Length: 231
Image (cartoon, rainbow, N blue to C red; front, top):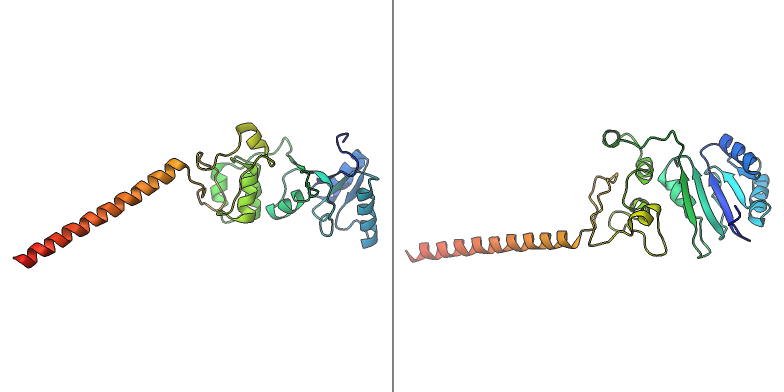
């Protein structure tokens, strides 16, 4: 962690207290989990991390409530995060000082992405927050958009921009709103609300054609009515 300087800190999240204890021992730092000890003992562990005795802490999702340190520079999730609710809160602890941060999700070699068939079959049996994480670590156009769609909703979802760039956008470039189709298979079954310019033009043309067709039909009916009245 040589790149972590001065007041900057790192949080490594794991899914179990046993993993927290083992990894903390290997890294030479402290761990934090729900039954670590008394409130005072937990506060002491947090204080030592905040004060820089150890710049890294390994924790379960229990490390969060009441933790407000502005200089968290890196948040690592070791293994698949269990749900998007905790995940969004945990990654949100990075870069609160205004200088940004990094979020890393490290999956084990044994991890297998959910197939399309399983994805559809589990639509109503797996909690939405878990399905969000399955899509986040699976195939998607933008990691930030995937998380934003869950947090902000389909109509307010946001994609990466210049100061916020995910690994997908680093590889493929920023999503071009109005020029590109987002073909991500989202958990809500709805298509992306962002239309390309061509799609929007086609939709407007279809609407105009429908309106013209209705107007012509009304004109024919009116003429027919006039002819019948004249006879």
